[in-house]
Length: 398
Image 1 (cartoon, rainbow, N blue to C red):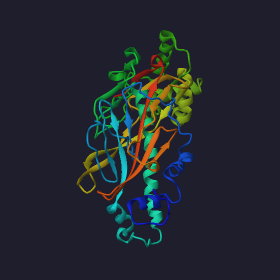
Image 2 (image 1 turned 90 degrees about the vertical axis):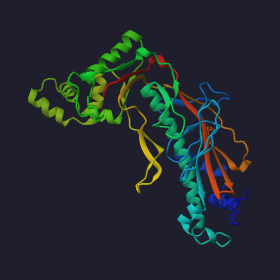
Image 3 (image 1 turned 60 degrees about the vertical axis):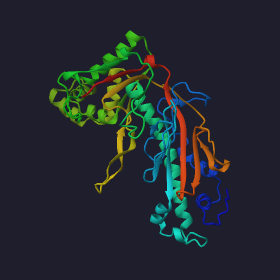
Image 4 (image 1 turned 135 degrees about the vertical axis):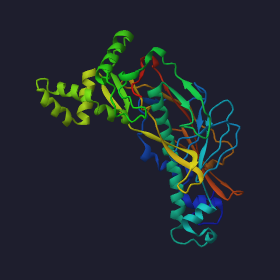
């Protein structure tokens, strides 16, 4: 592929212009500094393998939404700026890509017809902007997808492809990591921390006592299951914010802060407690190593109605960490991220680049039939907890 910045009016010329003086791999390497050091809570990358421990999952991701897992033999999708195509056999596979065509270019610069030799000022910057948006979005989506996996596994014990996180692809694909059934607990009736049927978490259960429950659970983990490592309590941001307002939590922490205070003074102490102090004292009172509040979200594209009342893809926010649950997991490493290096077949060498130690494949290609440029990504990674016998998950609210 010609990397000469002199524009020749072809689709390949647009790709070359978008990359400036860089090769495709050099362009992708620009994002190493931005994403270097990003980690997945509790999971470390394992060496890449040639085969899969679990049912293979290959995901090609685009933009901010999570990848869509589809049947490998199905035709691909193309939606707005982002499209999906997939081909799998018995393996959940997802592919997603950015596409810019003549329409998009006209909208951005109103000069596609003029792009034949004499380029107005700023044209290269526009092309580079489209390439930057595409590349950065694909890399960000890759990292988001792994965080989504980890949070779902840590808060439910398994990873499911369902209507909420994979609305246009495979449903009811469940990867179960075999956490013992006795490690799951569900509170009922007024013992639930919050009883609101609408999930608003404003009405505390009459018999609920979050501090006592967590204290008893950690005691059970140590005495019954003989797990003596420091234990972290993981919880969603929404649930933790509600817990901080739970009347019994505030009153118990007020007493813990000043055991000799009068009843009237305790009311004032409870009212003035800050969330960070509640977190620190809560952890000490229940003998947890720490309270880890998970505030990450994911976004998916699903068929819906746009602001103009027309059928379209709409971007919807979903929870990564199951908001009704809390988990008790030993501190430190939970497991590893297993996967393989995606293979790029049918591409020229200068259309292929890798990111994150060959874990993420990024490709570019031109399609003359659709007058389009495609920037695509693919990865094959799954978070795998290694010590499921030390993981405990409780559903504590309605």
